[in-house]
Image (cartoon, rainbow, N blue to C red):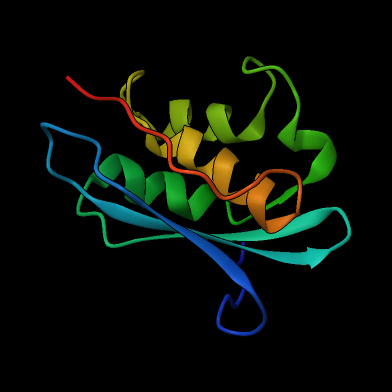
Length: 112
């Protein structure tokens, strides 16, 4: 899949600190149309996240709300070898929801 240009227009970016692995990244989404968003994941040195970011560059509204076992975000994360507790795929969903105007931009935390 070809990467979309996220430099133009409004974009929603979230910072992800996944914890002990230390591979922080930025997830950015931009509305392309009424029901589609472009996606970019940058800054991570994690090989799995790099593979994941190459495989999921655009997503539509219909796919966004599919169950986890059929959701292209989570399927791509699994194929890329992401750890099951990696928060990046969930950050992707949250960023796309906000970019499409389906969710408010609110912080999400998991803390020990």
